Image (tube, rainbow, N blue to C red; front, side, top):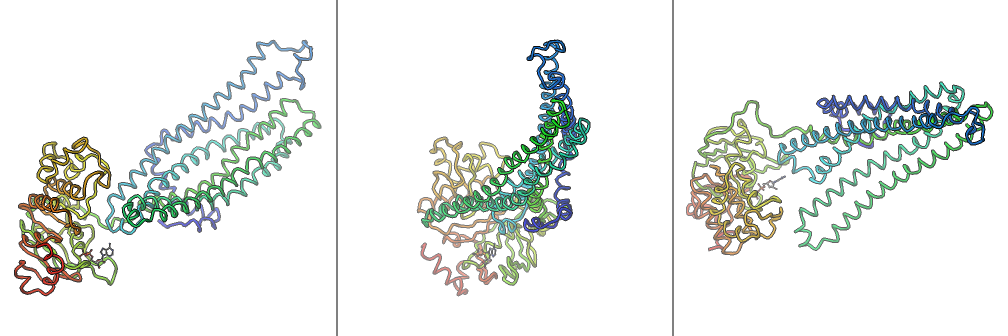
Length: 605
Ligand code: ADP
């Protein structure tokens, strides 16, 4: 879908706008199909509302003429000859509230059906967008700001919904209201109506004049709202960094600046919008004065005067709504196209058609002539050729930037290789279902991510089908059970995404428990570089030993014990494998390994 920028839209003619709007709106309409019944009902109530508008005018004219036959209240001036019985007067007058009640009911039902439909559509779109994002690759997320995505999933879908409600409701209701009112006005006095129709557009002028202003400021407001989300998201997610660098004031300043700008834009369009009402009222009052002169000159009845004026007063809101539809559509087009644009981003990593699941994995991994780059011309790994035997433990060592993490990401198929392939038990991982591939790989990362949920559910994340006993057993084996029981509510203690009151080592053991529960035949360990206290270190080591028993394990090694216990050590540098062997062999023949060993590992002896 072609992307339409706000600037493009501001300069568009109506024809171009309709052309540009077709795509996103046609797509929006597709979401309406499942709810077409309720939508059609809404349209029907809108039409009925329109009809009651004309009817109301007729009733007002009739009752006024009956009650005030000569513009004088015959009951008040003592002339009882033409007087209508009081009960009849009450009945006649009751027609006005009755018709207002019916009109109100139709308005309500129209709004109810349209809001119901558009909220359903909104939530369908939101869920679809979120699901689509969840299926995107890491690369996709790496290139985008999460604040911006939150803004699109939350706010911009809401804008799209507003467009749908208002447009769907007004596009039928208001033209009907205008048509029936006009028909009645012509019926009462066509000359007055023709004359007034020349004056009437004057009332609409202020609305058109502010339209452009509203549009421009509205678009900018949204941009700033996106910025506000980004600032908040970054400040909250990176709170530790903010604190440790003493940059609270800087973040507050960033927030204040985005907030002020947004307020400025809102104020700009609100100012314009709020001026419309009084301006229109001033013009309308001149119209009423002129109408009085016309009525006096043409000797019309009071009922005619009230109905004619009432008719034009009633014409104003529908005209205003209709003239705003264009503004609203433009404001919402940007939002809608952004929603669909994000939704239609290709999935970089998709399952091949009819890809079978990976089953009964033994754990042999072969890297075959593997090359990958994030940015063209800067290889992250290249020409990787080695095989990992099932059930053995491997340690990856190498300076920072050597390509160790990239190798993990490729194995998890977070990215596809640019050249070569990775085989698990002889199956190219590109040819199997991604979910089944990841089901067979457990990962323990340097930084543990915990969800804002109970400790129990955080462990259960490893295998949602596990029983309570299995969760507790996993925690026991990860040396986490005891400290979990010490928490306020044991396993049911809620921990925040930053781990709450748990220490770094305790959080890590939770993620090990998660991996134990997952019980995948292949295990990837990204060891923490930062030193933990000796007790934690020892506990984690024991937990990891339990976890990796009988599994094919690859560890990005930062601990001496890992390299000493590994069956094989793979030495990497500049995205390539420099050497491979046991600790003793490498210490003997690889200068790079000797250097790394002296720098990173020997301190731990
Ligand atoms: P290691 O884990 O050995 O420290 P990495 O696999 O993280 O190394 O990085 C290998 C190379 O790829 C480095 O040159 C690094 O700058 C680059 N790199 C890693 N991740 C990204 C990314 N998301 N985007 C661009 N370049 C990256």
